[in-house]
Length: 331
Image 1 (cartoon, helix red, strand yellow):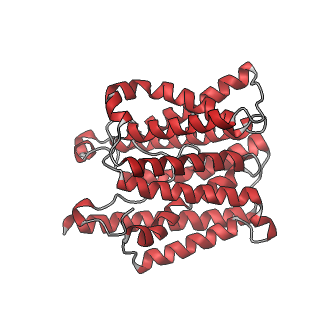
Image 2: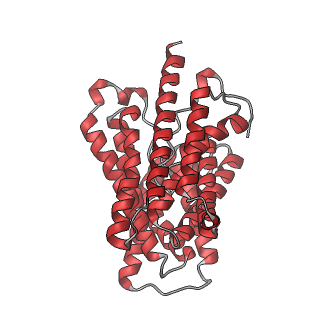
Image 3: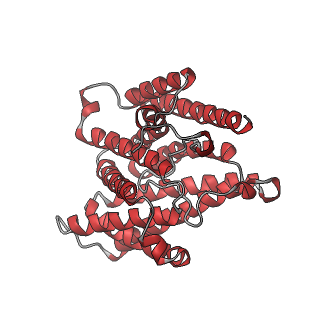
């Protein structure tokens, strides 16, 4: 990974890596990020874009709820295996459209392999940790991903970070500490695994910025294949034969995640990212609601305070980078 900053003509897109913890991708499943033409006034439908974004985030959290429910009975390997198989079936029309050669022979193979390794570690960490700690707590930690990405941009990419963003990073990390409830219990194995998953997620997003010329379908297909392979290797350990109902739910993990991606990507084509991306923070609202109704997990004051600081820091970083990006574009 190069440590030299990107040129102004190849400036990175703003950090918005939240979306779906248990799948780790916000990339387009078709032809990549929407181009400038699709963002013009004639193609915009902002209310529809906002609605699709909220729907996509709701589906992501519903998918994570199903995952948390299922890993209470079935192993992480089983979840990865069946979920990834269903996801690949859902992706097959896009894979066929893109062409097998395009998918099987991606550019920058070394970076792609590193990204696959990170995403596979992240999804395994997520499913393992969510079986032990409340969903809202994990979502709160993952909301810090944009803060981790911004903090890592300087040592890994050589990007300059101005003082306002440094302050936001510090505030965000304070929010993470508060959300983890500073005590000996904060350093329990599940909490540390969840935090490690967030770090893997952040590193994956940084690598994705280097691969932004790669089609989204290529990135998603390879990470699904890697998760499928890992699931196939480890699922025999502690295998529990699923009931017909649970087998359908395991398949639905891949189906719902794919539908959620489609909703978010369509939203990005209908409305500017600056308008709809902040709605990704509705993820914590859905996580709390589902946590209370299904698992009886009520958020405590520490989690609420930590979430507020993390969201505030993340929104500020997003707003700041949008502002800086506009200035660089106008220069």
